[in-house]
Image 1 (tube, helix red, strand yellow):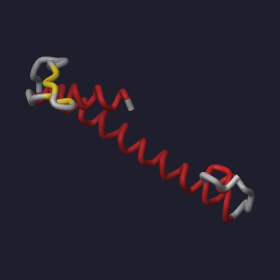
Image 2: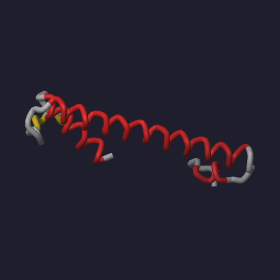
Image 3: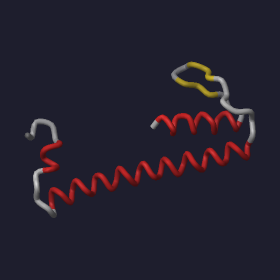
Length: 82
């Protein structure tokens, strides 16, 4: 998650845009360079998509445990269902 934050900061820095973080104006990490910003943007998108895929795999695995393997793994992670 921290890497995603820094990559986004690098993208905005490279595009020459203001970087606002909870109302604070942060300094750019790199000089304005659209080509480098594009590279960081691609990496940022790849990491984001990878994160979504991992979340989906995790959810599917929980459902497989519950409906296919019929163990209590899903029930154990739910609050108040111990």
